[in-house]
Structures are given as C-alpha cells and as structure tokens.
Amino acid sequence: MKQYIKGFLSFSAGTWIRAIVSFFSTPVISYLIVPEEFGKAAMFTLVYNIALLVSLTGLDQSFVRYYYQEEKRNELFWSCVFLPFTFGISVSLIFILFESHLSLILFGKDYQGIGLIFSISLMTGIFQRFNQLSIRMQKRGVLYSILDVVNSLGNVGGTIVFALTVSKSFYAVVWGQICGNVSALVLGFITDRESRKFAKVNFKKIGEFLKYGLPLLPNSLLFWLFSSIDRISLRQYSNFTEIGLYSAAFKIVSVMQLFQAGFTTFWVPLAYEKYESQPDSREFFKKANQMVSLTIFLFGLLVLSFKDVIFLLFARSYRNASFIAPFLILQPIMYVISETTVLGINFTKRTYWHIVVTGLSALANFAGNQLLVPYLGAKGAAISTGLSYVLFFTLRTLIAEKLYPIGFNLKKIYAGVLVVLLIAFFGTFLQNSLIFPLLSVAGMFLILLLYRDEMIYLKNHFKNLHR
Image (cartoon, rainbow, N blue to C red):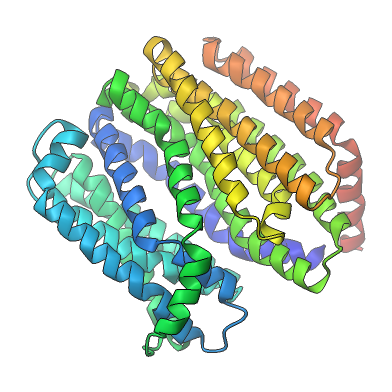
C-alpha cells in the first residue's frame, strides 16, 4: 500500500499545485474577461478537442499500449507522432482556408486570423499529448507533476498578460492555452532527450499501431460528443453568457477533474502491470475500488460545501454559476470510480464495448439536454450531464463484470451516489447559502458511515506506517 500511495502522490503533486494555481487565478481572470467572451473560449475549445482527437487517430493510445513491448522508445515515439503530425497539418490547412465559415458557425461573427491561431493551438496540443505520455509511461511522477505545473503557470500567465496588454477577449484564453503547451513542451524535450532522439519512422510498425489505436477513435469521438452535448445544446437554445457561466461552473469542478486526471495517470499503468504479473489479482482491484470510492465521494462533497464561498471570489457577473456546479460534480466522481470497475473491458481487449457504453450515454445526455436546457438553461445542462455520467458508470461496470468478474460492492456505491444526488439537488435549487454547507457536511457523515470498514482499514494501516 505504501508504494502505491507514494506513486500516486508523485504523479498527483502537480495536479494539486495546478488546483491551487487555478483556485487563485480563475477569480482574477473573471474580472478581466466577461462571461460572454468566456463562452466563446469554451466553443473554441470544443472544436479544438475534436480536431485533436481526429488528428491523433488513436495513436496516443497505441503509444501507451506498446510502450513496455518496444525496446526502441525513441523510434516508438516518432512513429506514433508521425501520422498525428501529418493529419494535424491537414486539419490546420482546412481551418485556415475556411476560417470565415468556422468563425461564423462558432461565434456568429467573422474573426480574422482565427484559423491560424487554431492551427498553432492544435499542433502544440498534439506534441504536448505525446510529451506528457512519454514521461507518464516512464513512471517519472515528479517530472510529470513539474510539467503539469509549468503548463498551468504558462496558461494562466499567458492569459493574464494577453488580457492586460492586448485584448480582454476570448483570444486571451486561447493564447494562454498555447503558452502553457509550449512551456511544457520545451521542458519535456530538455529533460527527456533520450526518449525523444530523432529516429527513423518505422512504417511497418505504424500499421500495427493503427490496427490497435484506430478502432478506439470512434469511441473517442463519441466520448467527445458525450461530454460536449451540454455546450452544443446551450449554443442552440441559449447565449454565450450562459455558456460562460456554465464554463465557470466547471472551474469549481476542475479541482475534481484534476484529481481525476492525476488518478487515471497513475492507475492505468499500475492496473495493466498488476494484471500482466498477477492475472488473478481481483482482491487488489476490489480493495482499490473501495478506497477510491470513499475518497472521491468525500472530496466531491467537500468541494460542494465551499461552492458559494469560492464563487464570492469571482466577479459579480459569475456568481450565479454557483447554482450550476452541483450536478456537474457527478462527472468526475462517476468517471473516477468507473476507472476502477471498467477493467474487464480493457483486460479482455473487448474495446468495442466502449463504443456501446459511450454511445448510449451520449444518447441519454442528448435527450436530457433537449428536454431540460430550453426550460432551465445551464442548470438543465448540468443536471442532464451529471445523470448521464451515472448511466455511463453503470454500463461500464455491468459489462466489465460480465467479462472479468471482480465482485464490486455496487449497493454501497449506489448508496453513495444517492447521497451526492440529494446534495446536488439542494445545491441547485436551494438559495440559502447557510443551510447548504450543513447539508454537505451531513452528506459526508453519511458517506463515512457507509464506508466505515474502509475507514477503519485506512486508520489501522496509517497507524502501522507511523509505527
């Protein structure tokens, strides 16, 4: 247990520092950029993410899958980067040539130079993806965390400097993202030269890598759709201000998403390694699920209990985002827990089930947004998104259990989900900011009662470590 905690902390240290940077910088940025411009930045990011997925063609996943099988790591790196780089240039040219149409569709206005900015953002994003993966697969947790921090500081610094010196528009957020990517890339190539030495691209291997990674692309695109339907629906039925408030609400959830990213970064290589060395290590995976569920439920409710206080730090125009955030907390909670229960699909290589899971979840989220957004706006989008992630967890878990039975305590997990749902409901519709923190604390107490055996185990374990 000690080595796992140490490994998780080394990988997640950057996550926590990023959370601190985000906590102090986001309120500052809210005074520089109005919700409408923040909403435009969210739409830019929406298109950027799908272009990045298409350009990668699943080869980032191939890089992870084949990393421990290939001896020439630098050859693996450049062979996996070659096609995404090529596709990235092609996509960039399309956006440059048709930038006026792109701009009108996204923003309802023609922004000059948006195609070139998009291209720079995309190309730096492709290299940054493999930059992080290379460090991650080497299990260099401290360096991975440092890259995370450098990326975050570059992002925040670039956004603030651009807003203060050039324009307080959504361009500031976009250029901030580019600055963050470039900063992390430079540091990554300096500190990891051995794995990045230029090598001849192995075209024979590329075919093998594509055979593994390309079937994962439809699922990635579906997941993009699943996680983007809320903003697409808001763009359809609402305005950029509402999208901006929704994006601001995600900022409070971003603390949880950083935990999600830190955990997934640490957990995925560990789970594969454990399965390869001990295929029948079900008790380990069951125990990990229990500990992770306890932690993420408590952390989620703790974040919610301070939501009103946190949004007091924002500009007044962003305060209403406090009532949008509660149901969004279900997204990182359910995703993190599902990462410990989805193992059966990954271990048995039945990856086509991911397409089924994501497709059904996306369909449910689309239906929920169509029903709720016209009446509740951003609140409706948050409710639909949160509930669809509960379905996402359910489908992932049930299918994985059929393929590789582990025997998770699902009754306990769903009891925890019910507690979070009740607290989220009150946080969305209860206007009294004094009663809600008490309800959140009561929810945490219920979670502790529910997971009392796990609490006793952790208490005894840390007591033994101390001795």
